[in-house]
Image: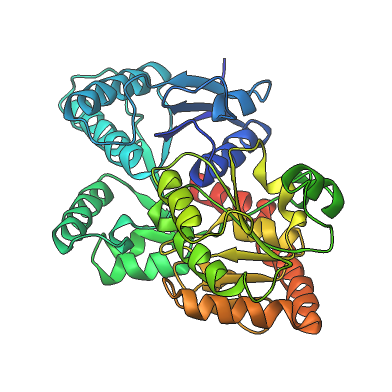
Length: 398
């Protein structure tokens, strides 16, 4: 007889990204910690790295929610809710742990419905007598995005409703925990901060020369490469990096910029911006290379120009790659970056400030080396995967 506790992770997209990596890291660690582990997500595209392909041979049971999609579609969302209800009833987990806004709302509602049915004796012996434990991880609140006021108010309302369904809400940054309390998203005692963690051996970095031979084979190894990695979305602020490049490239012919991205609606806009600005020889876009983080050592300086973040894995990866790093002062970035010590923080959406700071960094070798060394040490000490898993297990076992 299997007496192991059962845990079901639910996330909207199986395509690889920050929230997907978070869910993968937790799910893949749970079988060794005594849990029967299940994961449910939207359909995977076979041609790209995804959650299901990465979990092969991990001991985790994978389930597809056929009607899961990121955009709002009332009919598909209703069908997805029905799929989740049936899956929970089939698996009978002790814990449901959801990530991402859509999954959080639908999984929370499904668990709530089952609790109501159980109280009215319409389900047999489920949820368990001790209660189904429900946990939601918020990877940055969407009401921090640059949106019309009415949309931000609507998102806050939906976040408050989602919070009602959960026993515990994990925020990946203290910034987001404090924001949730300030905006009355839920009872303060529901929220706990657990920073994302990373395994130092988990990123197979190419050497600087190897990575550059793949990314910029026609350029000199002596050129200075400033780069970023992220989805082609407005939230990533990549257009401001291109604007900064426009201010710098004519003055510094050996300076190059690179945006490594995947998916997202902004790619065509960015390409038009590069062409219109006459930057086709200075700014390079690379679309969807497998395991983008392994190319980080190609960069001399890493920039994260985001307008909104939770606690970005790519900053942790840049730290492990020992890169001098510039990031916007948003979300959990300031919980990773100690200004002037292990990186520099700038105002979001300010390309002039960004250009000045980039210039300052590549002209100051001592600053570059000190920031890179200190960030590497901070990631090792404060943002380990082992620490993240241990703190999350403590919540599961309460």
